[in-house]
Length: 455
Image 1 (cartoon, rainbow, N blue to C red):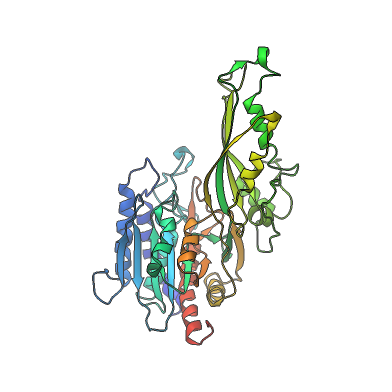
Image 2: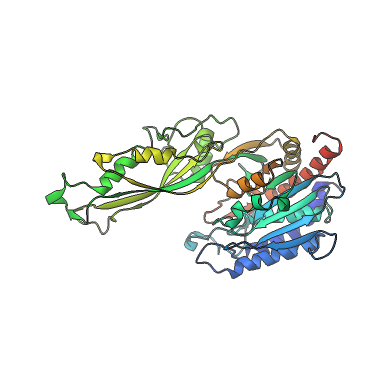
């Protein structure tokens, strides 16, 4: 039986397991109950056993264990030893926590009740990232627990919010030792188009603050001479972009993008841009989305319109989110830009926040070549590559822990799946193809080691 036929026999069971897992509201954000996160963990500890992976306390066998870190949801770590001493080992990653559902009135069905849609299912987390956990399970079942490579399976429980696990791998490198990694927290640019992600933009946040007066003052009596904090802040924010909407902060890297990207129509639909509204920036969409920086004002504190008084504003602040080129070191370019400004002669207070570096994996090695062959087999068409404006902080930690391992980013999601948005969905066709592709990757990568082409 060929690999595709074998996976077809597994699909009903895999789909049922995906529904079970997605029905658990495993949101690991503060303010949400911890019990569903533990339930999802426990289910994932049990599921691999039926695929030939036994408990760690059995000697000389594969195993599943729990990794506990401070203030962090438990991490599932499973291991399948390589079939021969010279076979490679592959690390498979995914996360079982999900984003909060948000405004449930915007959902067409309850967010934690998996509901059929055309060709798939709708629910929170059913694309990000629970189907990729089921992909790993499907690969184990396809090989009846005896894959052609060794496996280290790492299933995280607090990726969406962030946790101590992001920085943990370099402190315990032996636990993550491998020859290649499949980071299954990504997917295809569009359904049916196999895609490798070859770049992740970095991310940083900061707060810029203007505090001038002790309290509001009558705008008729003092406006025009008394300094206005909100006017000063708006003048600062206006310096961040040029007339085209491109970022105008010196020192932020921007390069042309040569890979696949969205059409303008696709981007307008995905972003929900209203008819008649322009896109901002110049250059290709890939350059704007992935090859260069983006600065977004994600929050602002100022008097509300509904409660506004006729007064000069004494205080205002804004929170900025910066996305930067995958190969740019997290630096102080935006902070330097803001601190140099003196709107109307007024000094600013700039407070840097969290920063996460970008990532750009090496391509062209044996794992990358094996992945191209495997994606072609899984989807039946030529693969392409994209980057991502989102970041996965753990990837950098894994790269530091195992610097010699090739890192591949692909999975069962697609860009049309509404991840982090209402009515998130996954397609059965993408799930099936991802299982075939990951299983084929293990076969091809093992073969490359046997015939010496991985040297």
